Length: 78
Image (cartoon, rainbow, N blue to C red):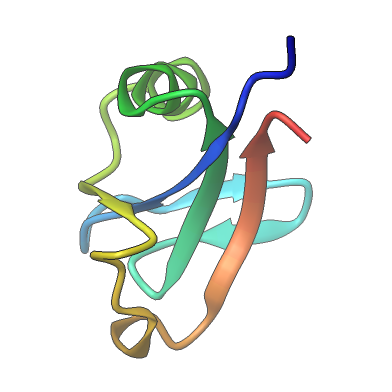
């Protein structure tokens, strides 16, 4: 049985800046995570960035206009 994955989006606060493989992750970019549910997506964020991130969105609630760099990193299931 194939499991369906949903895209979730995570943002960083003004004081949350990370560097990952030469990419700057900050308040101007978005992390996209494909996961089975929101809880699994949050766990991936906690495992990767600890508590240094701001908000979680779904495809329906994400407003990319506020994030000029767009999706800067994709994590989770392929």
